[in-house]
Length: 165
Image 1 (cartoon, rainbow, N blue to C red):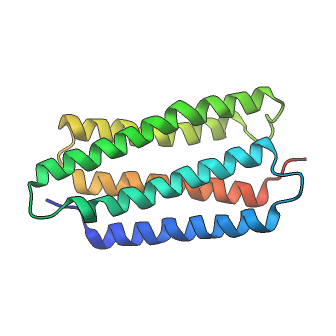
Image 2 (tube, helix red, strand yellow):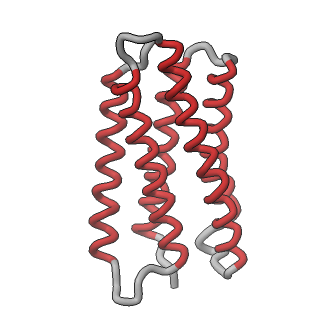
């Protein structure tokens, strides 16, 4: 069974909106000195999560069609799994490095745990769907994309309101 294309379209539109607002934020707040390391990190996490949500919402439009739904699901689940694993390889380590560089007040452990947990949950759910342990792939896939939206929204809000001193 293919996913709800209406839900995927809404997710892609929301993700595109977050990316658009972040581009405006970046353009308006950029100084001649550039961004601080925490701001760079938050903008990269925001962009990674929003683009992940947007592209993973758009892939089913291209992949589902006349062919087998099983093969289509396999392709998009592997894309989601690989994309989330790339985030797990990059972002948690960078958060810890920023904490060690003196930005503990901007990156408390609770936030590090929250943001890493979202990536880990997406990775585990996509892996479990690939292995066939989760039968209702359409709803869980959309849930994973919503988790990407939550993560990019948190990064956007923190970029807007939590500033480096």
